[in-house]
Image (cartoon, rainbow, N blue to C red; front, top):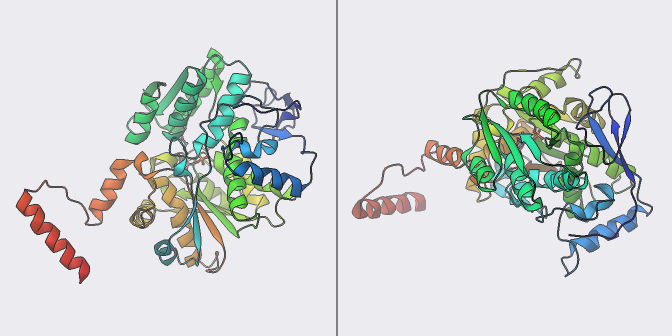
Length: 429
Ligand code: F0G
């Protein structure tokens, strides 16, 4: 996809020491202090109303207009990119199901379903920008550590760009759908003894040593793409902010992206009120929730354990950026148990929507905060479902079997007919 533009108006800045780097600097962290980087753009030279009009026009999918839900917002994503690697991605729905309102206690909970992206998770929004940037800087290969979704997305976009992809995943902790995608799209995939946190440390070292472009969410260009989850949902709501946006939180890249998106949308005048972020962690992998309870006085690390493997992360890389996001939005961080995550997943699945386990944390977290009175029943809440149900088919089957819906044993024809009759008569009673 090609755009007309001649304005190189972006640069990178270290959020710790303020050191600046050019837009095309390939280092994943600040070369001076090792801090996290942020991409900054010169503000677009149009009014908020004109910017919104552009976004609206690009949303219409007339021939010749972009249908990417990321590049539609290119003035605030990467204005100088002219030749982008796009599937396209985004354009995900905002859904409402009464069964989920009943379960959470929220009056009208909306679900932003990022599982509708090309590889089935929100990672595609960051990856279209990250791989575009990899090509712009002339990277010889791209790499990431992953709990599965980042690697699936990296593999797909690298294949499209014609770049070799190197992936490190924790052995035996990656859902089968994600591993199948990563392999099928052709990434060189190494299963590593150890957890995600160990894989991330390893890939950071390896990419520096081998001169390979690192595309984990510490990469600030990934964050620029992931901002568009928030921009797109605000657009779908007519730029009227909800009261809360809830999301599952692991490595905290997405929490950071949401905070940056809201800060910028507010500064540009796209919204006049900033929604509160609710970051939800699994109780067995909840250093950020623990940090929230003492106003982030110290950085926490834990040994992570949860069946929601996507967020089985004990040492989140984007901690500092995410602290800023929670503070700026007067947000909240909460931990929910695996039992609560899987209860939420059963509700989301049985409404015909479906999501992977980690995604259901954002629904479980809303229920918890409504119960505690932190979220008012009639407040407007959007929960982000980050990944598709089929990412983790084992978890989906296990959840249904546990709920008494499983047909584990194969039946003969007569047994099957008898069984169906019993099911129908019990459900019509
Ligand atoms: N939900 C899903 C489905 C994920 O795959 C992830 C992260 C998260 C939530 C948490 O987002 O890390 O930005 O806080 N998955 C990464 C991966 C770690 O490797 O796919 P986060």
